[in-house]
Image (cartoon, rainbow, N blue to C red):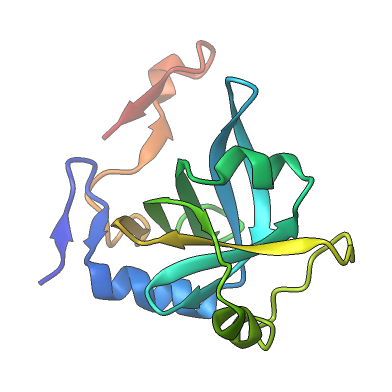
Length: 159
């Protein structure tokens, strides 16, 4: 039976998280840029237990995540937000420099959006991974809703 967290969301185990990561292609890198939090979308691939992204070597993303602990988030939600899932990875990013590995990565769908030829591969090992699934009103015990008594205030309650 699936485990639930304190909000009533299904807790995904490592294997479930990796299975979801294996089929997605777009995520968000959470990093620090100029001492401020930053989030940037990135195409990615799961490769030998790590998230791999490709970015220009002169980009803020490259400078911000190289040799730093970062988070990587992937999710998918229904338009009505009633169902969906999210997975978050944490790991220390490093540049891939091995020519044999770079040749392998060149076969993956990781085209750089800018089309620049100076792009580099960055690897985020999956040191920690967490995930949750939202099953909708019938599948989860708690969903965020606007309390009818508090509609004007906009306060959110969790029932």
